[in-house]
Structure formats: C-alpha cells, structure tokens
Image (cartoon, rainbow, N blue to C red):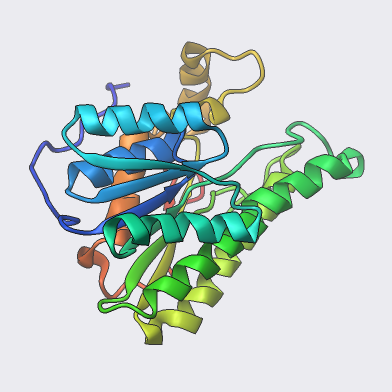
Length: 265
C-alpha cells in the first residue's frame, strides 16, 4: 500500500482578510482546520474547553506566520457559544467562516441496552446541542453583515451513512448533526448564510484508535477495513472543510461531504 499522499503545496489565499471561528480546535481535526485556514490568510479564533491545548494551537498558527486568538468556551452552554462569536467580531470585525468541529466519543463498545445515561446525555449535550448553540450564534452574526458567511459542521460517516456495533449513541448524535445541517441550510441560505457538513470516517487522530491500540496497529487494521486501505489524514479532511467554506463552493448548500476512503460507497 503506498504511503499517504501529500497535499499540493500551491499557495492559496481564499480566506485572506476573513475571520474564521473553529470550535473544538485544541486538537485533532479542529486544530488541523485552524492551521489550514490561517495558512490561507484567515484570522482564526479557536475555541474549546481547555486553555492549554488552545494556546498550543495558537502557537502553531503563529509559528507558521498566521494570526490566531484563543477563547475558552463550552459551546454546550448557549451563552458561551455566543461569547465565542462576539470575541471574534470584537477582535477582528466580522465572522465570515465558522467550523463547528467540537465533538466527543462516549460509551464506545456499549450496546444500546447498556448505554449509560450519563454517556448518552454527554453525547447529546456536546455533539448536538453544542452545534445548535454555535449555529444560532453564528447565524445571528452572519445574516446581519455584508457578504453573509459560511458554516461547516463536522458530522461523521457513522450515523448519517452507516452503523457500527457499540457506537449507536455516537452515531445518533452525528445523524442529528447532519439533519440539523440540512435544515439550517435551507432555513438561512436566503439570508446569505451558507451551511454544509463534512462526514469523516476514521481520521489520523486519537479518536479513531481503539482502546489500547497504537497508530501502527490501526494502520494494519485499516488495510482490511477501508477500501482506501488507510485512515484519512487530518490535512485531507481539513482540505474538504476549506473547500466547503470557500467561494469555490458558492452554490453548495446543505451538502454532507463524506470523507471515508470508500467505506460507505
């Protein structure tokens, strides 16, 4: 199996002069999206629950010559989701792009009959309600500004596109994200707010590792589990997010772009 390809190193500035907000940006795909947006000229506000990982993301952005600002927020609380948007507008004057990458995995390996109520509630609070509150705050800002804005929600191939034993709680939460995306897209495109989703399969983050599994062991497993033969890189998933957030996708509304190496083809 060939090694993972590198992304083209063609300089682009699709987001020059724009302000972007990325939730769940302290690690994984959220961090990769923040770095990619900054590399294309965006001023990026990164949010999450813990300050240290956010500060690390900001450091990485600035080391690459970009502009970023960290803001601690728990988007499962509506006031804090709103505060993140207000912070971006107060500092940079607008909110042109929002990427709702926040998400947790709880109750993995548990059947529906045994799924703990605390795990179920946590999944809904963060993965569904957190997206809703973020969307509402982002829409409120974007529909009142010249040029509107673009929102990309991070869903999953689990839930909207496939099922897997022991992951139903997570799958339900992500199916809700995809349904929320489609409904919001139709509700608000006439106001200049363009909303889409990406649905990754396994990406090269800790979330795709099974308990006790190493990255090397995951690579062996994926040779059998994925038609592509590997996980997607965070850069590949981020590239899909940036496409949907950019003017390149100006007529793409309510889409759910699957990035899973053919697992649900």
